[in-house]
Length: 358
Length: 224
Image (cartoon, rainbow over all chains, first blue to last red; front, side, top):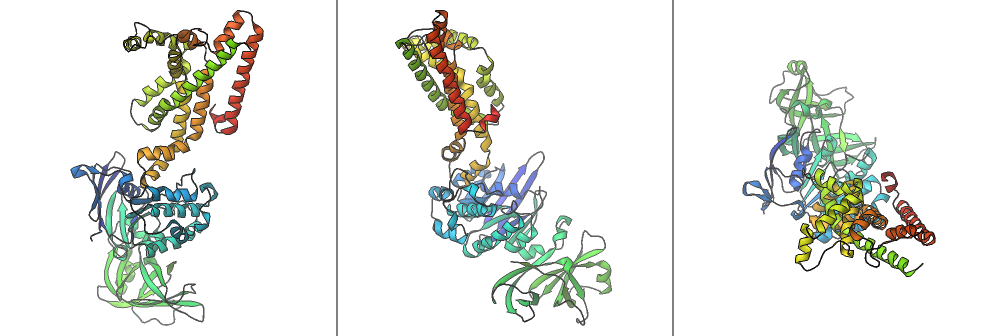
């Protein structure tokens, strides 16, 4: 069955415009990424039906929730969706259990799991009889996620669910989000302005700038586009799906991916566990010679795909492939000329830092 | 206390209970509309609801007397229905009191609805609650302090009214003679002992009402 998500919204207000036309995959996490004012939250609210675009279309597979060309607009309460807002917004007059039951009792279908199961999955099973004001921010947000899931949604919309939390709470919730991602076959639209969250969770990425979608595609395809507006250039980099290969004796862990291996400080994950890492373009340098006598441990063979100027004067962004894995390097134009970089050239990419997303 | 006094106390409580109940039924939708609407009519409706706060009761009573009298539109209507005229009857007194106490019930409830904000109702909608469902399962429970304040203030204000009772109800024993009017009668007749009983009772009643309001609903202290 076709479960593709189609979203087209045009909103024209005095101070704000949104004009997007998106096709998103029917499973996995699609991130709407952009700076504040880019329209990502408005776009999410339009999907939920909380905001009505005069010119709008929204459908999941064959189920059309909005089609203004024939005057169709389903109000939010008739849409099978779940929304998690930035603040948990639990009903303060209801216990955790009653909050979670609120949507469950009103849902047309069954979510396919019991309240106790989702409670365990999100680590809130012991909090069911508490009132919302007795919970920490992180616990509240997990209850809000469980509440949304129990209403048997066909899609989960998350509006910066971690933005109101401090780093510690964020790190507490992220593993649960990753678990949801792995264990539920539910499409998730995830709005965020935090590159790390997006790199860690997203499969599909939409970049929004001033109410327009400037790029939309699989995570690494978008991340490795080198023609994006300057607003996104600071965050240029790629995400690599690796697998923990070995914990070595000198407290380093070897990660392997399709194009090679990288070493990082010892990890807690078991051998064989998947691990995402993010490599910033600015942390990758290029050399033509085989590496000798360098302190840089991570060095992989790479082939140049193409080059593009960046917003930083005198710098270029080089797109490479390492096996099937794309990689970006941010270097000066002078270096690019000295190395005579051109598409097809093979060289060595030195990786100075790896951000581990897990 | 004499039977006339007891009868007045009973009548007063009956009036206040009836008026408070009616105000909760009719005032809640008005408060909801005022709290949620973006209509340009909001200012006008809000001002009309608040009018009794500033008008002398005699002004309100005078117009109600005219409208409900034999030549007024409501008077003609009630006579055509065979109900007779409303002034100087208990139902007439109830209608006048409903108008007079309206802002005391509508405003606390409206404030409570406004304090809830959009978010809880949006959340309810994304959890499949229709607007009607969300009103009862989210808005009303969250606005409970407002309902409590509104009910108490509406009740107490109806018990305490005087001018409008004289204008519309007159002073008919067992029908429209409430405590405040009877106190006036006692004082006119120099029956200070009876007046003391009733007036002292009113002071104690009012004090207990406000004490209850402040104790159960501390947030209200700031508003008053």
